[in-house]
Length: 118
Image (cartoon, rainbow, N blue to C red; front, top):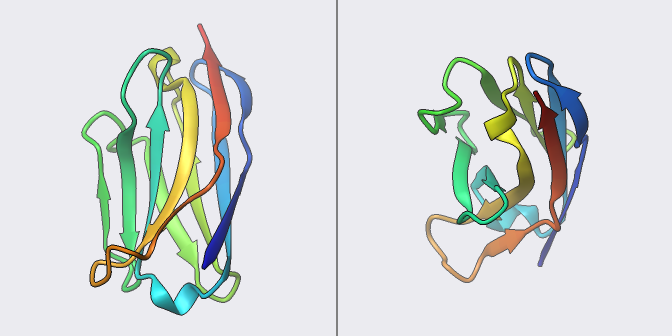
């Protein structure tokens, strides 16, 4: 089992920045990918950014150039630096950790709310 705890959400004005953190604990050797998803009110959950154990990253087109995902393996923590925030970035941000080799290894945090005011 892997436990994920997100932090860093809050209220920010458009154009501002926030940094989200996701601390992982438990059997973390069982996972190799960590991701950030978000769910806006009335919308489906969507992938925002992904980082592999080797450090390769992918981003949703809507956040490219504004968001940066990174990981500190020594701290078992993944970060999402969000700059130039827009009202449409508002939503609950969820941390996900999973294995590409075992679908049973798929874990979610409880989420942290990000609200961007115009």
